[in-house]
Amino acid sequence: MAARGPYAKGKAKRAEILDVALEVIARDGYSSATVKHLADAVGLSQNGLLHYFGSKDALFLEILRHRDELIAIEVDAENRDFAENIVDRILAAVDEEVASPGMTRLSLRVTGEATEPDHVAHEFLRARYEAIRLVVSDALSRLQSDGQIAQDADPIAIAALLFASWDGLQIQRMYDDTIDIRSHLLYLIRALGIATRTSPNPFDPTQPL
Image (cartoon, rainbow, N blue to C red; front, side):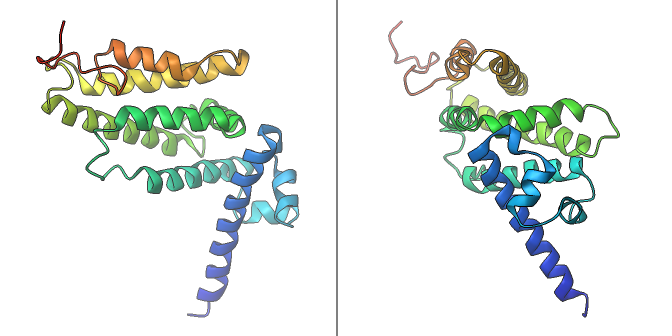
């Protein structure tokens, strides 16, 4: 029982650090994602900051995990209108990432480094990709059941292609900020036969040819 107080305080401090980190990176950009900058922002020494996470890589992992947890609450994939609005949700997420280049750069950096199996973020990112593909493919399967996607389409393949394209376009945009991720991804969505609010369902027999 005596350990509960210090544990609770440590957990609260970690949460505070992660909240501040998201704010700092959103405000000051990728260059702010340093241990010194983040430590200064929460009034700790660099060693004091890392005490709560163990290493710089673990800190960056927890920043990404914390951001994902906040997004998951907002997205609410269990909501019954999630599938119906899946395209709008994907495009809204793209818009948010384009508006937050600091977080995008941090995410791409960690994702690139974590391809090594022994990296602290490797398992988190592997599971993250798997979860994203599953959530989106499930939503697409529901649309397919409603006749909004061709019956011979493969929702699992479509989900993988969408997010492979998203990742690739993000990387290209780091070198050329004229790359329009939203329009390119919307082109792919339509080419894959997924209806959008501005593009009618191509498999609806009531629609004129």
